[in-house]
Image (cartoon, rainbow, N blue to C red; front, top):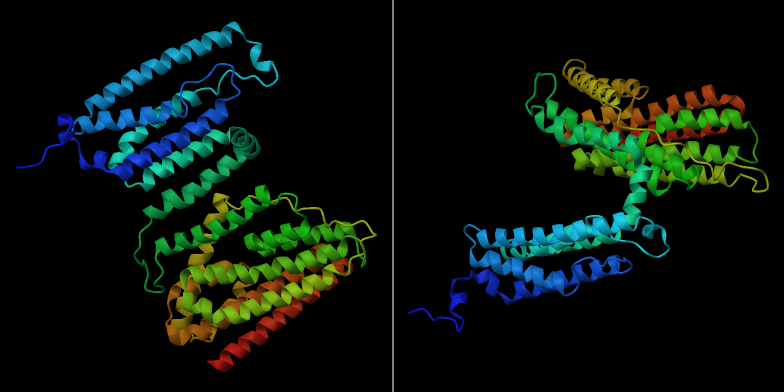
Length: 452
């Protein structure tokens, strides 16, 4: 015969309500939420319902009403209806006061309320009860923490919303379309025998590159918007070192030539953006092919370090007594234009087919010629096609060499861009630095092939 509790109606309650840890968690979270609520509404003229006493009672009421009838939750829904009616009465009373005293909000240090924040806070406290009973404990903890953070961050969130504006929301929408809508819809089966890469892998490559570029854009736009030209150049290198090179080269032509003032900073920024490109390549390769990334890491990290040394040497040539542009920044550009993603996908497919056809018909050596040609367009499509092609462990050195050749070819192209847009007077030094980096990349190719 089962043992009955001292309180008869508790015999039918689920074990979850009788578990001491869940009751303690519920009381602690509701009290925590009540403290944040009291702090936020402490300066309001019209005291909002809720707080360190009300919220724990609401949470316990919600838990008890749910536990007494968990199958249909009619008692819980009835309590929710009563709570809603009570909050509605308070809200209409608040509107009446605001209508009768429209000027009170302009008095210093006095506010009427926080809109519907008071209503939502009470509802969250009530709903916290059944959530704590039925869900893993991390769920109510996450809900309470999120509610507290959102309650105290009103001014910061409103300021952020004003800063972001409609343009940034449109950019975010494009990012979500690329990731959440297009990616799940594309098939994951090869469509041709020339390459094993599937349409899903093609768009996944677009997602990875877009994510890296978008992260760089967000940091440049919001985190370090006024950190200076070198910060902008480094973040631009994570986005697109070629585009950054063109922008900086045009600025160098306008600034003029000479070793003092702004030009040394521009020279350092040009080399820095290309140096960061090596880190970008390593990150992209590591996402799709860790073995290839390990094979490339010594060469790419050495090129990154050498580029940073050159950039530092160019930066130290500046004369602080002369006017410079160290505090200027590059305006961040939107990296998520849909046509840009489509062009990247088309280049990726073309290079993937070209790599597969060249390996099948012209031998593995043709990959190097293709890499050199790809470097004068965009490095990322070739890098991703090689990383996803899965040529096997025996071809790691060839794949690594091809990626280094593409990077070196791209550096030569950027050197031409610098001389074209900046002119020989202002662009000779950074163009020579990129030529040196390209030569070092070529030397790394011979080292990798010699060790194979």
